[in-house]
Image 1 (cartoon, rainbow, N blue to C red):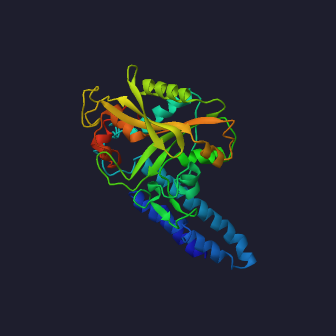
Image 2: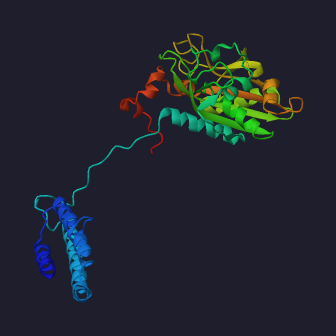
Image 3: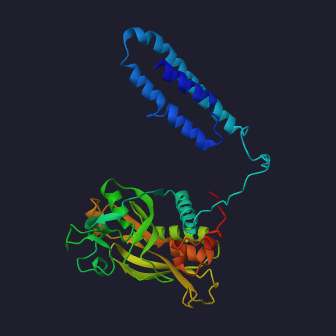
Length: 344
């Protein structure tokens, strides 16, 4: 065994790898988990007690020599002393790399959240895969409502009952979870991705992003809702943006309304975005239906509240004058590079 160690010691001392790949071969051969050093220590276990006194010291010296040689060779290669390319100028600056930017939907979502945070709203989140109760039934959707149909909802498990499992069609399900697990007052917004079985076009997609809001407390009125949303629009689109409310219907609010803003693209003169009306609908809203409050264990005679929901894509279309929402999910670098307002 002494002769073998002497032979390997001579090989190690003579080793002079020219690059990192050859150095790695050297490390694996002598210091790897299946290398020569490991094998020698395995053989050492079987020698007699008298030999161990002598060979133990020799083997330890061999190990130290192999490790020292490897470290020396590594430092030499790292410092460039062994480089074969004498024309390389190590003082030249490195190649630059392109910086990314936040997605326009992320920029809009952050701005929306910041506006409502200043009004005292907190952010709440929930699962994207929901059961029938949280996605439909608790929100006062009747059994025959068309939103339950396969044409509108991506069902994962369809049993025509309370056991249905689907991709959520709105973030209102987060409102239900919040009201079930707490007590008023609630003042929160729920940003997130939602899914609906729709044909993809310049104005619609099978998945999109929403921000919904909920405020429940004593003596909450429709006037509180209107003033909150009016303030939001002025903060987002600037002072002077016109707002109008139109009566509408939603199963989970009563009374309900849709809110329009004056088209920021054409200034109200008419374009394809506003369908030449000068107005663009950006959100639905209303007073929380008493049935929804009772479904969540809240006394509807003591508490009232309002809720609203908006699509981030629609808001972003108006803010950045983007006429085709398919651009948001196509990952076209030429499109994304235009949004350099916030570098990451």
